[in-house]
Image (cartoon, rainbow, N blue to C red; front, side, top):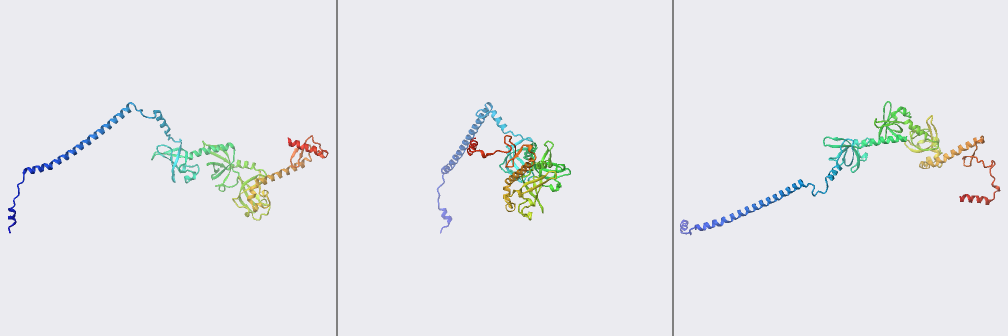
Length: 421
């Protein structure tokens, strides 16, 4: 066996042509040069497109600049005057004391955010939300969506937001209301909230007023009157000096002058005693004696009345010098015993029963005057069957008229003539 070297040595290979190598090299090099040409052409096209776009934008800006320089209002639908008017409409005065309209859009435990069409929202602290002392905005009816008029009282330097108040506006309205009530000379209710050596401090219309001890008719101590309401009248109302002087004595005098015998008033049971109940009737204490509660016997007042009960009573007597008022529910009973069995019916019929009582009193007084006139015929008065005093008719005979001689026809004719009239 011949060796491998001998076998390979016998093989012959054809010589490699240089021209063929040259052709192959040319074949591989031609496509690469074509690809490079395509990429370069595309880059040039993109660069030319960007340049044209830039030129176009530049031309647009130049044209816009020229229009703004030569004709700034061309194509604008409103004039310069309209522009200034719009600015004035939204111009905001943020000076302290200015009143602004605003809408509450958010609340929390400390206050509320209010939209007043300014550059930033305004803030309403809870202590400025009402003339009364409140802990929550809901107590003053302030909720999101509420639109109200506020007054600017300050500015928060931290965020330049404005601080608003409703309390200041409420104070102005309260003073105006007090001046009006003073002019009308009316009696108001005031709640005692404090006191000092000179008198009591009472709240009226949300304002704190002073009641000197010399103007208090009650003999109760300041401690006993604390947190209680009693009638007052205005003595001095001065907003500039923040001075509000009140009088309980004047109010009591006017109240007592209005207490007529037989009038019905509403009162509150203050206390019970074995002999009766003390009733507060507009700041005046009246006594409802046990014998004047009902026609039926009342063995225990507590079974009929309790402290704090509200009821209607009738004035039986009023001693202004001694300050004593006697009351009755007995006279208001439609039927005896109703005050025990059905007090609601008694209160519903109170005015009607009181009117009947007053008519009886008037008739009794007329009868009493008639008895006196019998001894004084020169007075020229007579008493009708209804208990009404009237002057005597000079045309009427002293012995009266006798209709027995008048025929029935004449009487009927007279009646028909009156009816026709």
